[in-house]
Amino acid sequence: MNVKYLAIIISSMLSFASHSQNDLRFSELVAYIKQVESPMVLQQEDARVLVSSNQAQVITSSTAVNGYCYGWLDEATFKKNKTEKTRLFYGGEDRFWLNPLGSRFSLYYGQKKIQQENWKVPDLFVNAIFPKVEQSKTKVTFKKENAEVVNNIGTTFNIDIERQIILYTKKEINKILQITIPEEIKSVGFGSETTVTNRGVSWEEKKGLITPWAIGMFKGTTTAVGIFPFSGNATSLDLSAYFFNTEKDRVRIKDSVVYFKTDGEKRSKIGLPREHSKPVIGYYDYENHRLTIVKYTLDKKGKYLSSDEEHLEDPYHGDVVNSYNNASDANGSTFFELETTAPAKALKTNESVSHLHQTFHFEGEELFLNEISKTILGCELMGLNNVLNSGK
Figure (cartoon, rainbow, N blue to C red):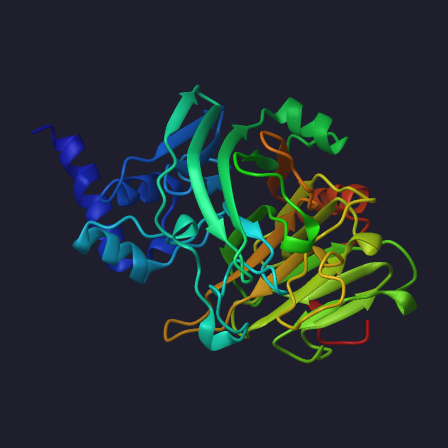
């Protein structure tokens, strides 16, 4: 065997043995994932995106072949997949679910009472493989036909789901975000477009509707702050808060921005409704100088489904964007999520609803990142290390 090749194998084995999979660099993670499945790598110059047919999800992305990986992965589930030859969902930077999460039309409690002990994620979001229908160097398309989900009151939805993942060029990122990325800044950007087509009877609001929901799972760290620009006056802001009281050290509203602690250490979640949402959210890791921006399609006149467990008079006035922060485990910080959703529509047979969710990462000097943040998020990055633990 070639000595150089043997050295690479040994190096990879040592990396797997000495690090959590969430510490691996991109090339190491690709090799690690290949122990269980055959992932697809999209590449454009230095930028990389790792994609799985499991839910047609983006596992992670990176600005370089040996760069930092942004997606969070559940190590315990991955190991179970390896030992038991299963294909259970194990995290990732862009995954697909369907809303609603809450209300009498929820998809996540079976037909039982809507309360935490009855929570159950449908198999479609746990172990479904989405067949690949097309792939190029920078794009891959999956399609899952004849899928079925049933809501809490028993309404059945027969659907086809198409997921297209695209890795953008630097020029395309500049055009989408209307910026000019400085030469000193490393970047990667990709988009997921999810289309749900009704293959059953026409849907009715009184029986419940469903809609695409994009969820990105990222690594929680004490140096990361979620950034959520909002429209309107702060005094009238209708901020949803789940699982926690809005303590000052976890959430703060300042200068038309909601700041949220994304440390992966305490279970908490926030959300913004349509009237206060803007089509961009993000987070910043101020220690490692990594800025993430999520852009999505927002319908200012659309109806958005509720995430609330309570029985609501109007289940069509829910959140457009959410951020969920998970609790820590025995190994320390876990993950947080940046989530966006499409508006609900009463689709007739063979009609569709689509949702575009785009993720961009920028790495480099804070001075340059600050200009990007001010342009897109309307937020100064300087001093974010104090925004949640001081009055500054």
